[in-house]
Length: 383
Image (cartoon, rainbow, N blue to C red; front, side):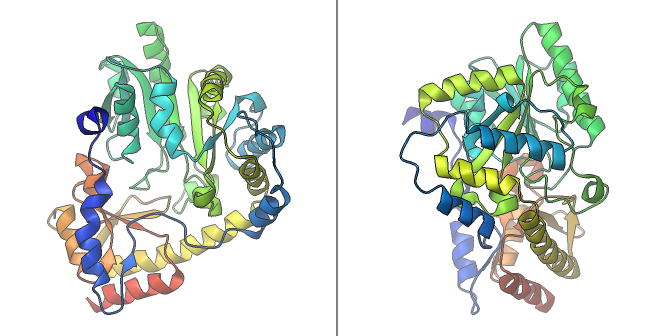
């Protein structure tokens, strides 16, 4: 009880309930654009892999099957520009959120340790630091804070493409953070881990990312060929409609992954065997990812045009599953915008959920059927 009430913020989504009720009162029902949960079918390649792996009476491997880890290595080389990853430096996780929330604790962080995370960010980075007893510090410029020796920084979270704002970090920006973290580690005499949450990397919309791909923190152009202190976190929830399967992994520094593996063995944090088989199959099949990307591209184009036509501005949003939206002209509090849209039967997420720096925006999810996206667009046009 003391932990929950004393160190963690209130769960933000509960405060959205009155606006959801207002949106549901619309004569044609609610169009829920507030939560990024997939709505499209699970790909057939995944269903087939699950059926084939259904007979799994024994305990699965915490480290993941060799086939799974090899599939991750192939995927990084083929899709992310990261060749030659060591299969031993791959570890499946029960979705990515648990790893984000647990990483500070798994790394042994505690009182006096600082965790840097994006100023506009998914709240679990903050929550994970608090659970470990560490201090979360939001920042739009982690490299400068590291260079200025802003506290005893032990972990730096990056999120590219970003949730909620769809911002992308280029190679130079990533390398500056990595170089600053390594310089701080040498200066201060303790490791500084850089962990990059890259779950939306396959959903790039704007150039140059749509053509060249979203760079990973493990990219050799970023690392100089040295993965020391670096972790990349990835989930198949978005690219493969596998949120219900909790299929994800972390990869990078072999020594760090080995340490995480040892602790997770003691904790019993194991991805179910059939889910490991599904992950392997999904990573080796690019066709279903391309098909899903096109669905989101279509909905994004429709919704973006509708919001802009209704007097809203869309900022950043270069990649990912969301539009980062605000009214044109004078700044308006995000809750007022949520209320305006709820009156049209459209529910969105207030930027305040993602930090004080985001209080002028709302997040609009693309995870809605074509039919409901069209309904939202028609309501915006009518308004």
